[in-house]
Image 1 (cartoon, rainbow, N blue to C red):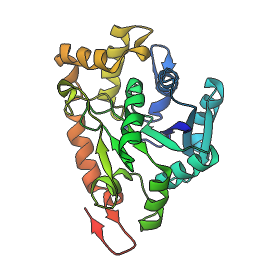
Image 2: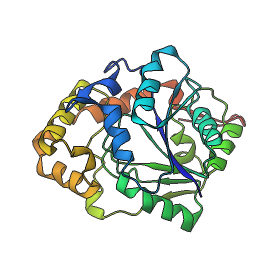
Image 3: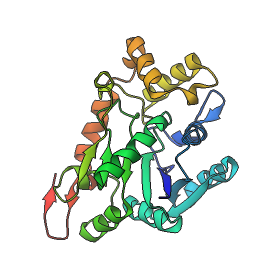
Image 4: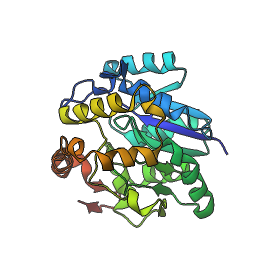
Length: 258
């Protein structure tokens, strides 16, 4: 089984312009994410999946310099972009996360693949962990089925098709109960998030990208004053999502889920 990691990445952010190219510890966030993923021995391919929009050209340059693949596809139909990338690189299984999660749990990828092998789930998730410290595992066949079912050309929130309908088999990856802290946040979307990451990377040092998921969550446990910096960003993000028409699940059958 050929497993690849597809990084969903664009440079269109208005809240924190070109956030993936912002530097922390002397390197761009996207480079740190790629280097962290290279620690996952079970991955046979790492693909930076961006759009054909010229504004995303710098991401293709980063991919080339970091020695990973780059796929350029649809701007708005994210699941189409991911599915097309899975076909190009002949992937039997896909692990995915957006590029604004540079400290994603690379050391859980083996467990996620094992969960898939045991359950044959369309989606394996671990979204009960801190925001930014999670993954999604996908069958390419499930992505193809979603493309056949959806009525919208904007699938930025493609996960909702799995989580808000009963059309797919979804499994949650089992992790230690003391990791279940979705109120914690290590995602890059607002200036406050950037401030948090600067503190994390400075404190953990040049090998911060190698830190284990367990040690990372323990660091957050030990630094509530840092978590307070971007505590309101999760609420702001949720409110923004709820107001975004693209967050509605629209099916060809006419069914619409908020």
